[in-house]
Length: 220
Image 1: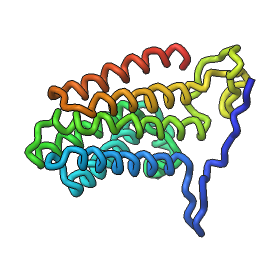
Image 2 (image 1 turned 135 degrees about the vertical axis):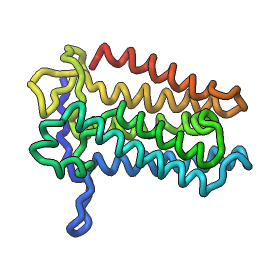
Image 3 (image 1 turned 120 degrees about the vertical axis):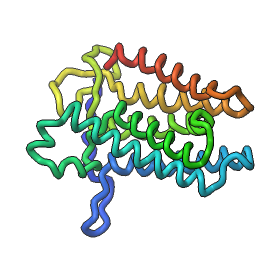
Image 4 (image 1 turned 90 degrees about the horizontal axis):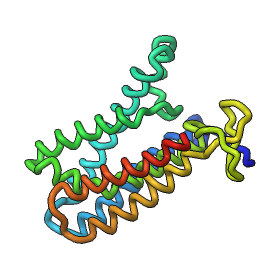
């Protein structure tokens, strides 16, 4: 049986400014996606400019944060929002909903694709191999924050988390990091290394994510 390390929620302090682990993971996610996007664009010159990649990541980040936060507030934490409305803006404390973030990202990419005059699925096929990096960083943030733990287990790597009972539980955040982050990234990066029919990369992302999430749900 393992015990969660109970990390200090503040990753580092710069004078009066405190950077929480959750916020730091978002920075890592978006910075990594940006760098990977530039690499993909340079590997296939002419399709995307550096400026377009930067804008794409910026609008995607805005969609993810705004959509994820609103989804969390209105579906899971509405009472907390009513008691403390300013909590809506304290994103670094955690509290993001994946489905809300997904809808926000899709809306942002649809708008930006239309602005560029590109087909929506051309944008999605470009972005899909980058997304698992962000998913992996987010799941590490969940683990560091001691949230989204799994079901009780008697397996040797069962872990006692700080904000629930004393039962050892599946560290399902790490399962998701390994599957939805590392494995899915490797699969999509390999698949997208050659020209593919439109929608096929996006489709593989959807299938791969769905399969991995299906198996993880047995431990969540």
